[in-house]
Image 1 (cartoon, rainbow, N blue to C red):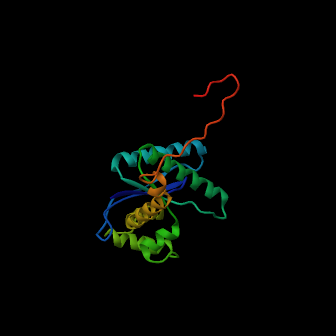
Image 2 (image 1 turned 90 degrees about the vertical axis):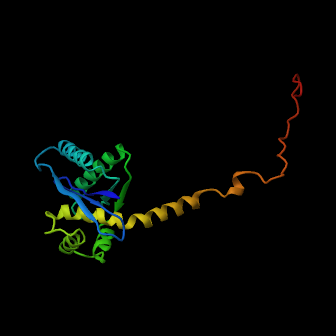
Length: 200
């Protein structure tokens, strides 16, 4: 499984590509950051994020895209920029028919370090160790993107089982879908003919 992880941001959007399967060593295929100038118009910055995302998708051909789920912060302006960059990443993936998964920061930290309260330094250290890198990926946005990809690879089997269980629960039982064998069809009551009409 090849996953492109996205740590969304308007100024720095972390990107990381990881390949592997649960229970086996993982391999980093690429890591970087899409940057946009802070003094540019928001619409222009979103175009730059989209162009950067398209380049990464073209080059690495991932099978899945994992994006950090945006959560509420005190700085509303930062949240807005993060949400906008997240939407661009999801749009680029959906346009190619790629499945998109959203993971919360605590889910990613727990998957990679074992603690949902780990700090960025701990996440960087574990990403470096898990991917057998010579040095921690920098900036932190790049390491977070790799952590998202790792999280999705490890969580995907459980998520797939959960989705199948939900789908089965919503499916109507077979007995409700077709009549019992040998059961006579229900008769449709006929209304009396109106004056001037002949009964069919």
